[in-house]
Image (tube, rainbow, N blue to C red; front, side, top):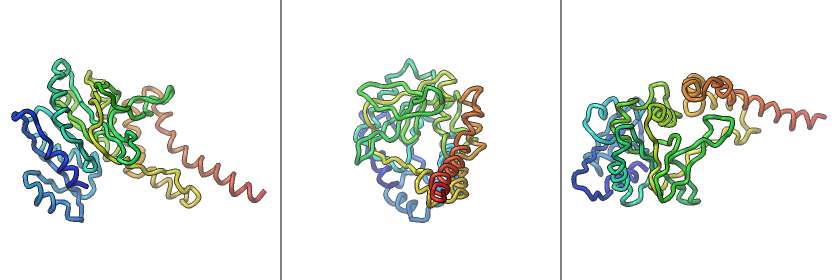
Length: 279
């Protein structure tokens, strides 16, 4: 998967010979030989070895702190290893950034949208609010033929200009895995920057999704609770930081909702299927 993503990025064709690109890859303790294959097939890619406990946001910050922030560049391209880009997308992205000269010094992020290779549905990209009552409930925005400004974004593939980085830095150290990208877009907009979806789809990427409600009859309340509190779901401190920053004065109410949901679901299931059978 990583080789496929790198191949789709490094084999992009640029119209301008002035564009130079360096790639830094964080290998957070993989044991399947990924690093060796990358060194063999893409010898110019810099590989940094993580501790094995970085997770997504931690891994992105590790690459930033260990290498990227010490380099001179006009744009930071962030991408995940599960994407496959369409031909010419990177040139299209950089050209759009260069043509947005009036927005540059405000801080600008250009976001690529992805679709599922089977269903064709949008999976990642820019997002907007989808609820009249919940300030941080988002839905994916379908790309169009024109750039679309949005509220925040998935950092699967995005171009961040140097002015955005000078305004708010890179990803917040408050997050180890999830919400760090949404937090970045929201902080940038609060600082006067913009998040814009590039026209059309950038490529294909399947949705990475795990449902806590699946097999409720087969999973104990303790296991469901532990999963909810895990690094990849809703760790209470990280969720509190995120909601305190972006959900307004009612943030404690929004913060507590998922921690009430699982015990309530389990109670309702017990009443419906256990007590009901007894009665």
